Every structure is written in structure tokens, then in C-alpha cells.
View 1 (cartoon, rainbow, N blue to C red):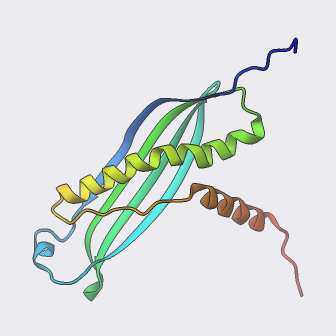
View 2 (view 1 turned 45 degrees about the horizontal axis):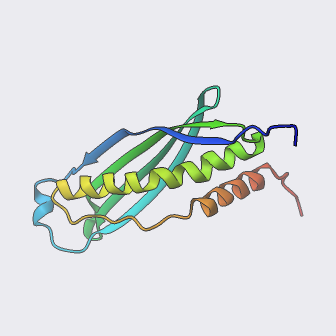
View 3 (view 1 turned 45 degrees about the vertical axis):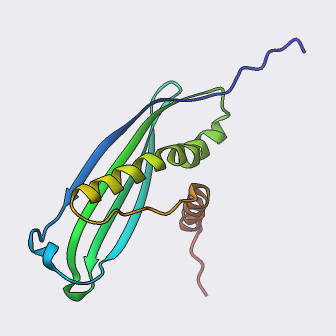
Length: 155
């Protein structure tokens, strides 16, 4: 072969905590409450281009713990784990899946640790976030977008 193919580059430049917050709105009384709190976990991913071949990906996790009796908030933790990634020689149609699947997969262990550590430091048992399949999340988001773009039909 006389043509050299340019090498695909996907690299981590930096991983960092972009935002981290903890609220215990009913402290100190909440520590005296009895009952098993319900835990709700929400995820949000976002990516943007910072420059030529440089992207920031942010994975935000919000964990809310509430007591069933009286709907009293035990704690609320929000962690935004971010990374700067260098991407080059990747076909344009592959950039979005890379940012929507590979980057969150890289960031997830860091945000899991940040959430667990924050909850433990607040005086509560650790919250261990379950493994996530960001490929299925990405596919679901794409399907939702496609469904929203479908013209409405009347019967």
C-alpha cells in the first residue's frame, strides 16, 4: 500500500469533577428518623466541542434519598464528572456515539466513587451505583429523538 492511513486517536486529556454538591435539608433531625429511605438516581450526559478535535464530556448523576413517611428528604447529592478528550481521524458519523457512549463509560467509575464518598462523608451508608449500559441509554435517546421528529398522524 502506498497510502498511509491516518491513525485514529481517542485519548483522555483530563478527568475532573466539574460540580459536586450535597444537601441535607432536614439535618440534624433526619439522623434521628427511623425507616428505610428510598433512593432515586438520575443520569444526564452532555458533550461539546472545545476546539479542533477536543471535546468535553460531562456525566451528571443526581441521587435523592427520601423517607417514605412524609416524603422527607434525607439527602440530595449531585456530581458532575467531566473529561476532556482528544479525538482525531474519526469519521464524523462516529463522533456522536463516541461522545455518548465511550466517554460516559470512562467517566462513570469516577462519578460512582464521588457519590459514594460524598454520601459516606455526610454520615450515611454508602450509595453504590449499579453498572450502567451507556450504549442502550444512547440508543434509547436516539429513538426518543427520532420519535419526536415523526410527524403526528390523525385517525
